[in-house]
Image 1 (cartoon, rainbow, N blue to C red):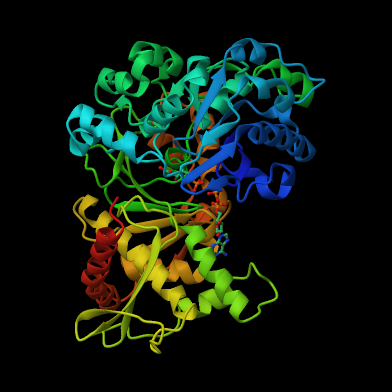
Image 2 (cartoon, helix red, strand yellow; image 1 turned 180 degrees about the vertical axis):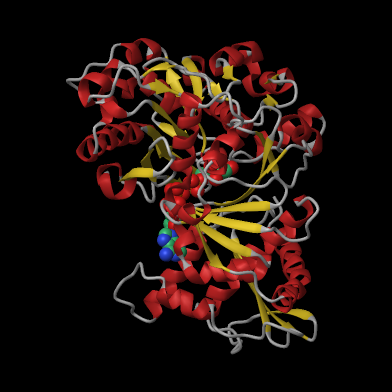
Length: 554
Ligand SMILES: Nc1ncnc2c1ncn2[C@@H]1O[C@H](COP(=O)(O)OP(=O)(O)O)[C@@H](O)[C@H]1O
Ligand SMILES: O=C(CO)[C@@H](O)[C@H](O)COP(=O)(O)O
C-alpha cells in the first residue's frame, strides 16, 4: 500500500493506492471546518494584498489525518509515503528545529512540540505583496525574459524567492535566526522524517531561485534575496536539492510508528508540488494532452521534453523523468471567483442550499447564439484577486459586443442581468484565456487531443461542457478520486519509487493503466462550428483584457 498526501490551500488529503494503483482509501482534513479555532477563511488569512497560512494548523492537520487514517485502515501496511504541498509556500524553521524534530514525544502533539521552532505564518500563493522584490530580482539578471530562461518563470509575486526577500527585509532578526527555509512539500517530509529534509527537484522551480539547466541556485539571485546576509548563507538555509525523484529518503520517524502504528520500514519519498504531483496522476501524451486542475487555483498542465521558456508561463523540472519538464499556466481567480458569482445568484434567488451550483449551472448553459456571428454577445472579466496571467486586477469588467465593438455596460444597461449573466461570462472568459495561451504550446495539433479535468470543480457538468466547447476536444475525468488527483499522483509516485525504478515512470503508469476502469469520457468533442464561434469571441476578450491591464497597471 502507498500513501499520497496533499497539503493544499483548503485541506490536507491522504489517498492510498494498492500495487495495481487502484484507490483504496481517501481521507480528508478540511482546515476551515476541522479547525475553527484557527479562524482561517478557506485555509488562509487575508489582509489586503497579504495572504498567509498558519503553519501550526498544518501540524494539527497531520495529526488529525493520521488519526483518521488509522480509523479506516491498517497503516502498518503502508510501504511508502509521497505526495505534494501547495507550491511556493515558504516555511521558516527557527534555531533548534532539527533537534526538536529528532526528539518528538508521542505523549504530546506535533503542534505543541514544534510550534516554537517555526515562524507561524507561511506566505500563500494568493499573496500579492512582493511587486518591489519581483522588479528587483528581474533587474539583477537583466530582465523578465532572462529570469524566465534561468528559473523557468519570470518573477512572480507568489514565488518563494521574492517572498523570502520581503521576509528578510521586514523581519531581519527572525531571518537571521532561521535555520532552514523549506516549502510546504519539504515541511511535510521534514516532519515525517523527523529531520530537516531536502527540497525536491520540481517544487524547487517555484522559487525563482533555481537555475533549472545548470542544476544549482543562481548565485546572483541568492545574493539579491539575502541582501546583507549574503547568498552563501541563504544557500545553507535552503539546504540541498534532491535530484532523484525516486530517492528513498529514510524511514518514517518514531513519533508516527509509536503513536499511530506506521511500520518503521515505511519509506518517505521526495514530496513534490501540488501541480507536478497532479501531472503524475494521468498518462498524458506530451504536447497533445492537457490536464486542467480546477482546485482553488486553476492550472493547465502539460508534459514536454522541450525547454522553451517564456515570461507568459512556467516551466518546472519534471518530478520523475530526468530532463523532461512540466509546462504550467496558473490562474489565481479560479474556483473562488466562480464561487462569488454562485453566492450572489443563490442570494438573489434565495436558494436554501447556499452551496448549490444548480442555478449557476443553469445560467452558464443558458442558450445564446453559438454559431455564426455574435449578434448579442457578452465579455466579462472577473479578477477578485490580482491575476497572474494576464497581470490585471483586482476588478470586474463587463462589456456587450455591439457592431463589432466592446460597449461597457452601465448601471442602466438592461441587456446584462447581474449576477445571472455573470455565470456564463466568467466560465467563457476563464477557459477562452486558457485556449488562447495553450494552443501555441501544442505539438503537431491545433487543439488538445484530450483534456483531463481534475480538482473540486471538475465534478461540475456545466463547467465541463463549456470546457469541451471552448477548447474543442474530448474531456475526460478520473472515475474515482477526481477531486484528489494530486494526492493520487503522490501515491503513484510512492509506488513507482518503491517498486519500479527499472521502468520509466510513463511505462510504469501505462503498465497498470486500464482506460475503461480509470477514466470516463464526460463530454465529447463539439461540432467544429461551436469551437469556431468561441474563437470569434477571442479578439474581444483580448481587447477587454488590454483595457483592464492598462487600468490596473502597477
Ligand atoms: N460542484 C462544483 N462545482 C463547481 N465548483 C466546485 C464544485 N465542487 C467543488 N468546487 C470548487 O472546488 C474548490 C476546491 O477544490 P479542491 O481541488 O478540493 O481544492 P484544493 O485547491 O484545496 O485542492 C472549491 O473552492 C469549490 O469552489
Ligand atoms: O500557485 C500555484 C501554482 O503555481 C497554485 O496552484 C498552488 O500550487 C496551490 O494550488 P491549490 O491546490 O490550492 O489550487
